[in-house]
Image (cartoon, rainbow, N blue to C red):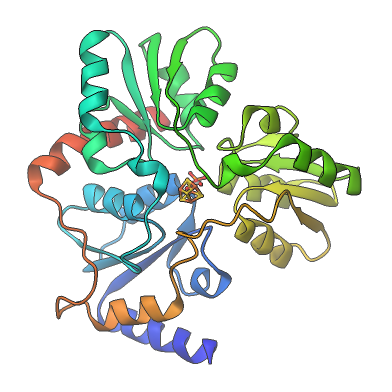
Length: 307
Ligand code: 13P
Ligand code: SF4
């Protein structure tokens, strides 16, 4: 049944000259039919290289917006219209503009998990894979980092010579994991290495053997000689790793790290989006040129500094 839907999707994708992008938090059956998979940075850069008529994003809304901004002439669809990242909506562009007016010499660094409207008032974007490198490379020594205070606090520790101000935002899924939980899993698997996403709380990242983006965690685990790992990011990463490396053991840091938004997209959503590309029933990302122009400034800056 799953294989049948997958082969229908592959057929339709070819007919419509569409490219499927899947964030690594997607389920295995979706990753299998994707043309590009990876973390949010890798997806945004990879998409711009494709010559196609449409992109279908299997992920959350801000990711589809980023693809639209980088490929404004292409049609971009979000496979499930309800999939949004709650962190992306946490900060109000007007409030951030007011903070900028008060401290004009403080550059605003926005995690890519933000709306396009918020990006229009920011100076540079970062992803979890590039945040430290970009903040290090910026000429500015005074920074306001939004919205994720856990990622921001991780960057503060890696770049102690800069004055980095944080606001109280973050990922409710990763931030739900406590140090007590980490200690309990570690007690059960004392030989396992702990690999966590920087969206986790500072007391959790402080105990980790490796802190990195979803792709960083996957690469580290695949290349490591160690045999056991506790994975502190969305549960699908633990599953993808266990499937890719059957000779190693992967444990969930917590079964609470399940992102309901990332898990909304189903194979049937992808199939229906492809079927409905031209009849107005699929969820297309529509942005006006002015918003794209303004929001793209900080994405282009991210790509320039991230290279
Ligand atoms: P990555 O930047 O690692 O892809 O993470 C995106 C995300 O939403 C993490 O929760
Ligand atoms: Fe947003 Fe967190 Fe889900 Fe990532 S895991 S999409 S940051 S809510």
